[in-house]
Image (tube, rainbow, N blue to C red; front, side):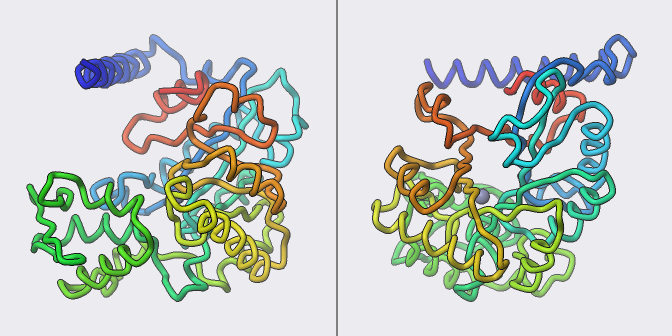
Length: 335
Ligand SMILES: [Zn+2]
């Protein structure tokens, strides 16, 4: 029943989006009228690419799409820093946005920062510490790319993972997706996964794929820190799903990530976004003790969390819809 309801609401949403697109194209609705009333929203972007290849990363938007969105925000809303957003330092009669970019991609430095400079918009960039551990990619992007580029079965910790269809996900023999297993598995499992796929080939040799995985280097983080428009925030050490880890391990990740980013950037790191939006009340308390004054999730675990002054929810940008539908979602705070 639940599954049917979810499917129904997905279809209804697609119909609504298609109808909106028809209305805007026919001139029956005006884009200029969007974001013209008071409201607030923190936006969550991931990576940016030049080519608009949604098949390579479903979380990325293209440079052209980001440019169009930021230009619209510049003209129709007020964009404030996360610090000002949390402190309520803005004109409440105008639609107010704070921008954030998760995952520490090099492409956000190369493509997003110049646009933010051009339009004079502040943003917070949430980075991990995988560079300190000698990695230049996140496990999520590694698996995304491998799932699209490889077809051979892979053996991880004695289990053979197979694909059901080309370009699809790898599955455990019991049907679970490798992606879902890896999300909550400890780091040694992810290392075994890297090894298994590396034996099958390597995506990193292809220059045109760099946008889809390359993390900022320490020199890049310094360049980012030098921008007066950019704030650096923490996004976990390894990009592990923190609430599913033993509490002590999750605390260690938060501590080590903060230490790494502060030592590299030379700036205090007071903002935190939870990987996968995964948090717990205990983690929020611990992070606050560490000095994370601004903590970001995607969905609140319970409605009362909305009253916690340390926490805010974000709206994740949907790379597959038109700018008009995206703006409608931003205005209403949901899809
Ligand atoms: Zn992330």
